[in-house]
Image (cartoon, rainbow, N blue to C red; front, side):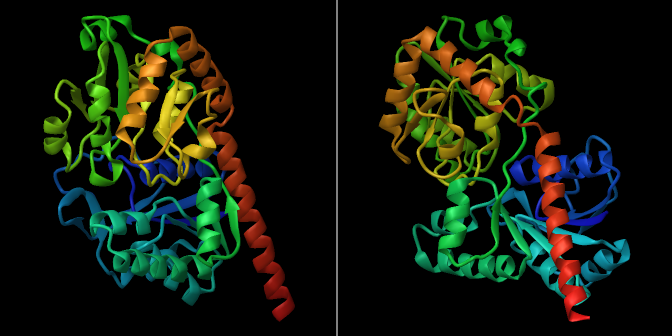
Length: 380
């Protein structure tokens, strides 16, 4: 099977969309398929890093104003030519919004079936970045509907995300969760020397991993930072870093970490806390669970599918810093409970590998292609 993967983000970008597309491309290659990735070009000064698993074509892009880590693809007449040149059986649109919308138009012109993967709460981001304005949110939903209603199938990463799409009039929505590398993210990577470095007084280590941006609401950890006997560790970078350093005095900011170093940091935590109220999935929660760490997260969106309340962690009201601190304090005071929740979380996600979810995705491709071929046969 030949697949054109049109994505809004790809490594060296570090985010859920980029990581998911990378794992998808790797899995397609392993299964003997032929993917092509079309993605925005990274910033000129950014090192690309590891070799790409398949051909990758970069289209011109510019940084998002105020958030240079996010790159936006510029309009290009070459997109349709790139897709056609690959001769794909199917076009996969990853978190389509700008480049993905143009990819959908190109696929329609070429008569190619499409699978659109919903992954980013663009409408929620529009609301957050426009100070609660409903105008930006409504415009975002119009764009999302235009793309996803045209797709042969939309894949949502969680039950709440699927319900949200359906409520906004998007048809043919199916569930497709994300995988996790349960070998890399594993409790055996817990590092006592690292723990002593981060918490020299023997404090309970509470960690956040992710972008430092307004929509992630990392500022909600302020009350947690003030808890006695707790040390908060913030791992990631982004435009909110300077303001967060002021809002979270006493927290340890480690910047962006990846690979084995990140895996060791996860496993060395006592509690993982996620504060973002607009997650369609939340890969970092899943990575913490694979690392055997109990989790605290908002009772909204993707975390509802991931966190089993009072079994693998604690769900709290979204946007409530006091509730986050109370949940962390509960777990900080009970080491046996932390161990029990951590072991249960590990058991929940251990088998949810990228291989298994990759095979699920290929199954979705096959069903879309079968319906497309059937429709062509009827039309003929």
